[in-house]
Image: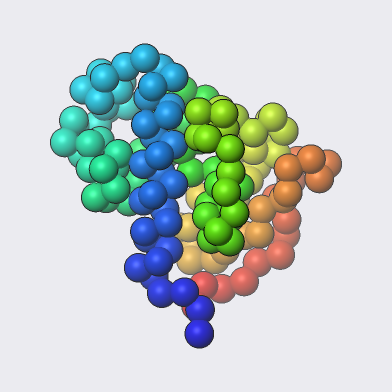
Length: 139
C-alpha cells in the first residue's frame, strides 16, 4: 500500500516551510513585510512557515512572481519522498537553471493539479525544455 495523503501533506508543508523561510531570509524581510509583498495576510503567511497549512498553488505562484524562487520545486519534493538529504535550503533557493524547462514544468504541474492528473517532470538538464508527456491518473 502506498503512502497516505497525510504523509504527502506533511511533506509538502515541511518542504514549503523550510524553503519559505530561506526565501524570505534571502529577501531580508520580516514575515509581515514578505506577506504584504505577496498580497497575503500575516497570519496566513505565518501558518505556511509554521507548517500549519499547505502552501496553495496561488501563493506558490505569487512567491515565484515576486522573488523568482520556487518554494516547492519538484526536486525537493521528490527528495523528501525518497528520504534523500538535499543541501541546506539557503543553497537551493532560486530558479532551476534550466529556465524554460522550469516554467514548462511548472505550467504542466499547475495544469495537472487542476485536472487531477499527475505529470512526470523532465529531469533537470534533460534537454528539450518540455515536460515529460507521460501522465497517469491520481489514485
